[in-house]
Image 1 (cartoon, rainbow, N blue to C red):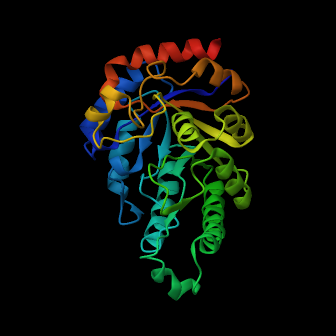
Image 2 (cartoon, rainbow, N blue to C red):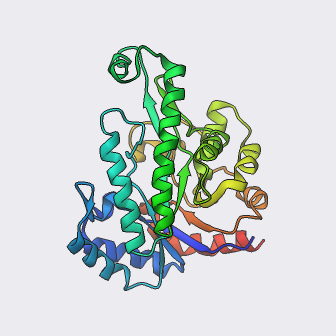
Length: 309
């Protein structure tokens, strides 16, 4: 498996706009032997009110330039282009993310897939704009609108030399939330709606493992079906238990939820996964819970062994 390099994600809450914390945490990643760090947009305090703030940008750029690292950029986790109330604000935030990525040399942006909350109590909010349409019919319209927005943003990103990876996500409760983000094949279908070469998939292996067990689809088939569209890769480990005790410390003893463990600490069969992904040539980004930073170097060393096997 020949890849561009190995990365580790920052933690937005731990950086929280503090430039000293940003430098310290990038140091952990660089010292571990990484080639890349994945920045989290809402942890940098550079995009303010939907615009890139030039003085903040310059200060952040100075910190980034201190390290021999390449960078990718994760958009804010709550950014959702299907949002009825906040969609326009999120769109502007996405535009600003493209501008920021270009300014700091990130050629890859990660976007969590869109979703709509469609329950009997809020459908009337959609009636004014869409007429009396319900659930599946309404979601089909929202899917087309979302693809149009992503196409516009994708063209903007093309001009900036940036690619957009739509990530398959996890949902603990989908009774009221409509999304294309759970099954990788559905993400691929949406990418094909968008129809641009620089809009592809960020395949999150940990999310895929959790949701394949919870929602009953084939883990291997999902990875293989997504592979031709994958331009970025997120890897981390868990135990496949889509339960949530509401705090990390409460989840960890029982192996519940999206734990973002180092590879090999959970039950995902990563030697097999990387065999399935042997044609992948992008960045392998480890999304490890940052509390495990003392293990970053061993994580990188183990990843190099897996990739060379």
